[in-house]
Image (cartoon, rainbow, N blue to C red; front, top):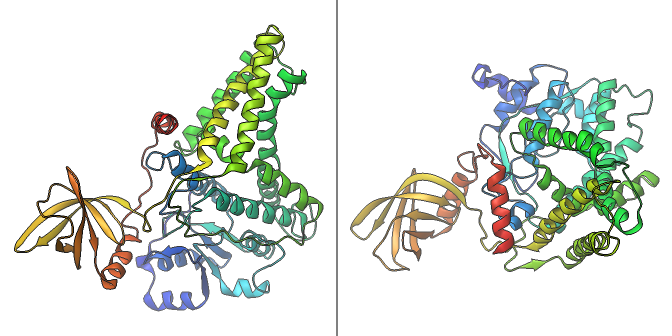
Length: 475
């Protein structure tokens, strides 16, 4: 259950000012807080045991998987399942934790523990742990109160996830680990730490084992799972179908098994390596910052990563060919059915991974947001109302026809914003305009990067996601 939304109107202005002086907000440099960020978050600090209020992280750009598969309009970013489903569930058991940006911290509690802890590269998560040791808890306010930049490239995505993994393993190996005695962590919080560690330490390893299982079976007759056809149908198939259906239902489509496996395979070897090295040597690792604001003007192929997936796909195909063409064995019985299913599914995952390795260009310097609103365009003595289809800090696209040529000056009135502009492009049924001047850009930046645009997807249809991926594959 998500934390109930506070009613900010009941808090006197003087009380709000005192609260502000005693709290500190955490915001990454690439995040923009909305105007009600502070007032909404502070209300939950009425309870003195609250040390941190965390709000969800939303992004106004697509992550590299969304962008490279062209599914941004039909499938949300990876973090939506975590912030919309996992964190509210953790909050119901008082297990929510600080995720860094878009949070507010009680300053007196921060001083009580001596400031931000530095014995983990994920000091935000560790901050929750150390405050929990002192009796403070973290609450999750499930409201969109800020927006920021998601990693734009595969390399940046891998760096970010590897750092998260490194920090969590450092916490579990440190003095605040779940098996340490005497630090005062509740038993449920210890279990939550173990569960989070197993996500990084076991799920990626399991994903790689699933990728290697059919290869080892067909090429070397090494069986990771002993199951014939009847066992697979009676036990394995119901488990897979039930798990996928329940996950899709609970997550509202935010988590699709196929896409989740793609996300994991992109970084699985790196995560496994980080876990192994950090378990052996928790300290001495460099902190790697996730680069942001990167714009790829053309295609950028990640050859090393692409080669990895091509090798795995080639070996899988070789194993299938050996089983069918050379051995002439009965693949349906004696464990072959399960591995046959694994092999074809893995080939599908690897094919999508190869598509993701081809970084699609991000030609626009400013993010565009779909919208439906009206704008008044004045050109010379004529004024006409048009419908805006998308908008950015530098311009907008409008539906309809215009007779004036490209380059013609215009005047735009959008709400309280009035700005000079120029016709930048003309199409058969639409045209685009670009704003002129720094004042116009500043005004549009304030308007665009607010809670007005970038609304989350209301409904997610797996069929649409698969159609987009298939279109990306064949185009």
